[in-house]
Amino acid sequence: MPAEWAPHAATWLAWPHHEPDWPGKFPPIPWVYAEIVRVLARHERVEVICHDAHARESARERLTAHGVHPDGYRLHVARTDRVWVRDSGPIGVHRGDGQVELLDFGFNAWAKYDNWKHDDEVPGHVAEWTGLPRTAVPRHDGQGPLVLEGGGIEVNGAGRIMVTEEWLLSDVQVRNPGYGRADYEREFATWLGCDETIWLGEGCVGDDTHGHIDDIARFTSVDTVVLAVERDPADDENHRRSMDNLRRLQHVGGAHGDDGRDAPPRELRQFLHRQRRRDRPHLQRCQRPARAEHAGRMFPWSRDRRHPRRRSRLGARHAPLPLPAAARAARASTLRSRASRACRRVSLVPACPVWIVARERPEGTMPP
Image (cartoon, rainbow, N blue to C red; front, side, top):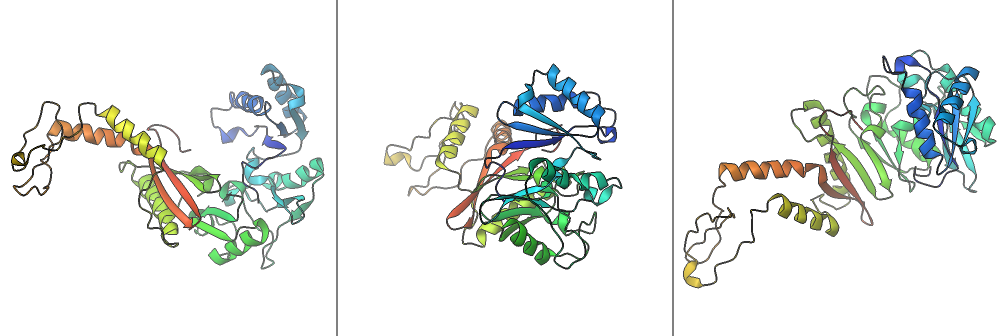
């Protein structure tokens, strides 16, 4: 399975029509989708699945109002239950000969809703419209189709996949009853060409899909993972989950000989250094005493409030003097402001490090 950033011919969307997905907020949603199509159509063709003829005309009207050129999109009519074609649509993979093949995994509305049969037929429609071969994916035990959603898997295009245990191994919203960790890893290797699985713990609180990976972690290159981290302990549950996921990624690196210590790249270290100097301009460079007779002196706080160090008569360095309350508060504020720029390095294999960029979710916003 190629990574999401690999070259592709088009982006597929389903036009919104199911109002309960946006309770009390549906009227502006079609216009938002029209803007999404407008931006995407600048770079590639957009394939839009419309629920019926009325939805197709509504989509055409809004796309025209947004100035989207008709050559930039195509409208198809097929019955759908919801718009989440990332989960219900087919997954494209490359065969050994390079041919693109569409994998038709089962879809059951995240094992939560009853209206899903139209969405389960979307892969067949896409195969018909594109002319690409389609393969229905069964469970290896013969107990029906293998249920898998595109938003629940994250691949780097080089044989590595990330999923969460909450999505596949918990007792809530069970997709494939009777399946365990080894069963899923076998299916990933067989159908997606991924022979290494990274298991994170749980997704964000309140996720309707119960643990999709695309809410919390994404590959941005073959060796880079962006991880959403809640560093505020006040948000107890999201903090616990995200810290656990961060530790799991560090542990994956440790299993291959990397201890997972902070080791940001040179550019990031330089950036953080500049930020520290900018955030604390009152702190100046500490000058070591120039003469030996000063070595035993207890230096008081200077006007610029530079953190002093005390030395014994033999010149040995001791613990710094306690910070005044104002300095401690300023330092704590600076550390919090830099939390969103924290960066950790974990090597999954010796030759392929993964940079985990932990970004703090702005207060008052929805999860990514």
